[in-house]
Image (cartoon, rainbow, N blue to C red; front, side):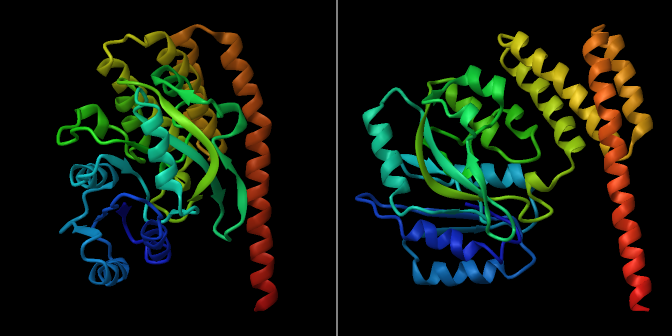
Length: 315
């Protein structure tokens, strides 16, 4: 479990681990990335009450998401590792036992994941992850390269290998570690899907979470990350990755336009034409962006005017 300023949620996350009904021992490793809120106090209470079940690692300074995750992973000593962020939780007390049984019956699989409920800040269920389009009985490295990470982090359980060393490419991504870890795992075999909702993922629970980032930043990092993995795999999957990058660059330009950076967006669209020569696809994407941008700007303007009128009415 990785945590950073999760005082609102971490008690529920810890409880969901401690209540797991299993025939095997479960050790909870919590890596706290130097939280500045009451997260350490909450965790320490649970450690004091469960000293043999919880390993607490509190960083002296902030390492960042990826390094903190790697630190937690290196301290996991069990045969299996299940991931849970400090702001998510498991909704079923048999999640771990169900997943371990799945791997015992499927020895060629490196891991598995389950259906996950995505909720908003008001605890309302939005939809299940993975979506129906990605609900494969199993997935391999090609599926992950084509579709990216379509399973929730809190749903994953995998066989524990020697993670004392992780390749440099693992540390390229700044918004979580599930996709790179899944890629590195599926080099050795497939992952299975259990279509039973057993975990919950909170959307944009804090400004540090992946789902709270600007779309342009996510697309920009995704381009860098796919390029890095393309090199790491010695360009074996170059065709797959280049097709993604082609679309990601368009998505990046479109997201900048929607966020108000019109000049940069136009420049990127022009550069995209010069780089790929696919004028039809690029122009159609650009034309589609124009009405969306206008609508987005009008919506923002409407909100500003409403807020101004509200403040004027108060005064």
